[in-house]
Image (cartoon, rainbow, N blue to C red):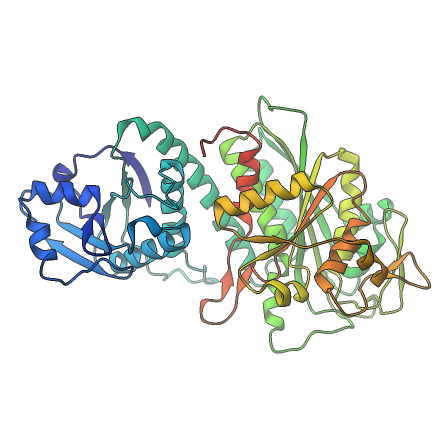
Length: 502
């Protein structure tokens, strides 16, 4: 499917369908008014019948409209004109794609450039939301060894830009949107793979593929268990000891041309390709979903793809912390004391609190790069799901400026996060009689105590932690990876460049 930016003469556009909008109270958008005039009031005459009042969910397909070359015009209800936010706009687009998918429409013109989202007439965000939302609507999980998946009819989508002065900004948005969608789709595809395919070694192979595809920008180093032992990554190793699939940590070094500053940004993704909980075994009912415990690593993988596609002038270190937590003769136990790479010791009280053990050694390993900013992304705690539900990710940071930057990126992308505290009182929950601290708290504020645990390994840089346990995938009918928080991370990186007009 191809996207194009164009300043169209709508009445002369030879296409299968033009999509225009109608607002509450049967008020036409500018594009709809223009086509109505071209057709001598034909559209208005139909609206007067009262079949489409203009509420979200309303739609009317018009055929053979007088003096219009397009085969069809689709009128889409958009609700109140000045009350459209990104969430409602995505709903409008979803409704539109549902209609189009049922018909043999290959070429479409979307004429939505006069829309105002949150009363902000910014063409950049309009184009980006349209493209990413359409791609999300059309995404399907790839079935293993199944080549009979139904193809999508849509071939070309033209985004009509009503004002020529907006064309340059629209082209930038198109470029960004396609790169971000590539990142989101790549993260989803990786996350949705079954764990017998996507294991720690497979993650490392996917990382190496990036160095081949983007050889001018990306170098990859894979740290195997032998190297981990040499480095003293005992916490990381302990988690993987019960599995025949040994751990691999992939270090992706990205460097764009003409970097704008000396800042080094590091992204660390929890990559538990399967998590049984170890000896502290999980309940069986939803254990199959623990293949999604590597969504943090998938998000980092996808974000690096976006950076490489756009050749961002930044220096980024991406770490995919691949590991598998299984039961076996070598599994680590509750009661064990582990010496981490940092030299700090940890008493194991629960082997299902394994992600923080993998991450703590990854965060210590990062010190060799002297990063200015480190963001870890992890499906870390069920407690975060209890606290914030399935729509909002938890945000923790030891630096207020970094916290604000991530929050702003979340607001821009509608990839919601909420900040939670790291007060000194919470650290007491991790006290241990036999080690520097334990790997879980006393049973309350679990998402916070997990973040407190990680913060013990982040003293040498500005750090933020995103707990995506509730947002990384969906269960039930719409089961599958969401691709979050890839767009948030992409926006955070774009904001480092200060080249987008907001």
